[in-house]
Length: 243
Length: 305
Ligand SMILES: Nc1ncnc2c1ncn2[C@@H]1O[C@H](COP(=O)(O)OP(=O)(O)OP(=O)(O)O)[C@@H](O)[C@H]1O
Ligand SMILES: [Mg+2]
Image (cartoon, rainbow over the protein chains, first blue to last red):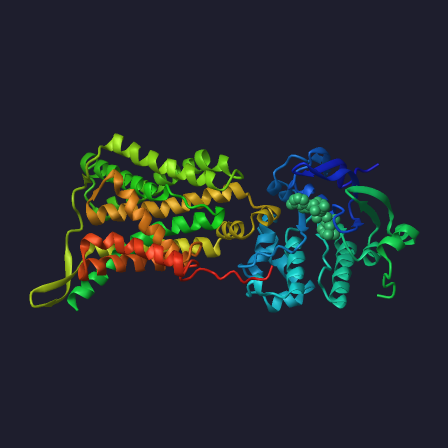
């Protein structure tokens, strides 16, 4: 049996004395798209950030490529080639699009820079048009693209995407999902995806986890989860199955 | 008119020195939101390092080329002062990061007092002179026996300042180190998510600020020919005023503020009263804080988040 690329085992995370994750277990295998869905405040973003050690897991273990990264400093976790497009985009607003991409490539081999730049600009031609514009002056959707592009510049082994479709027009959101699927197919990019748009996410993902109040309550393949009545009721209500 | 031109020359010279110090205040404030009150004293210490280095060079090693010795003195001052500033950050500020907001500020004031007293004890309370060099002056214009002069020293100060600012500008705007520095300034958490070692970057910021202050310290010593343990205080506050006037956090602002403070001080001395020149400079601080708290080139906070 091959070991998973990322294994989160019994992780408990607190904000001060308030517990946010009550012992979470998830696994992401190489080449997979795994999605994490759940209501607002369930703890999805907290899990994404806990993987990066900020906040740090108070109990449990996070193992990446067989190495325990639970106590590793955040920047070293990034250097293990885990990249994140975090909640709220977090663009460096007083830096240009180009500089944001250069920041994303900080952990990558500089020899790849031109090649990777060309690749992400091909994925997001809009960024190419705005390459020397300051990040803070981009539209929300453009910032979202930049956030994803910045993460891709690291040539990540594992890409964490926290609500990449947030605030995007349906068409653009669609494009983003297509890009994720495409990257996964073509380059075997491994993705852990948090999404409000559960329908799209489950359709895209190989496997999914459902989080409720800081605990994983359900898991299964994307297809399976899509069929579950409780999921349909809770997350796909009025879910635009036609979208 | 002649007086004006003369004071313009003097003001730009003084302003260059203030600007170099102000950059250290503004960078540290930009990255960790703290006013490093010890920065003025770091400047003073650098002048002493330069003093000691130049005495060793001229009296013991007998190096006679002024340019060579200036270069060596500059490098010594920059290296040693950077090391001191790095140590201060490690010992006095870093452990307090994440503690309550005033803690590092109080620690900085403590460091300032420590440096001042240390130098007073180690070097004595009197003004320490260096043998004068670059004595020549150029007469720019002359009228009714009043000569407007540009001293070689002043040209050297302008040139050194310009070269170092150009190097500094390149470092901050074009290198990966500078990008990491700016990224930490904008969003430390995000910077660490892309692999930037934030603690290291903060250390680098202190080192760069101290290196520029050391340049200022060396030039100050060369310009006035003397330095005393108390010389960190007033120039330090003036440079801080310059940083606030230019817009704290803004690098061009620090430079502009420095030049303005230098000019205001020299013009005030010439046209009003030299005794009140410091009062003039500090009044600017108060007026800026009240009427223009974001400073001349400070950024208005209207960015999309
Ligand atoms: N910095 C913080 N300090 C204190 N509590 C926090 C902090 N960040 C999150 N929380 C709390 O932790 C819980 C989980 O938040 P989290 O952001 O992980 O939820 P989420 O599943 O990502 O929600 P959403 O779908 O709205 O993004 C929430 O109850 C939230 O209030
Ligand atoms: Mg969230």
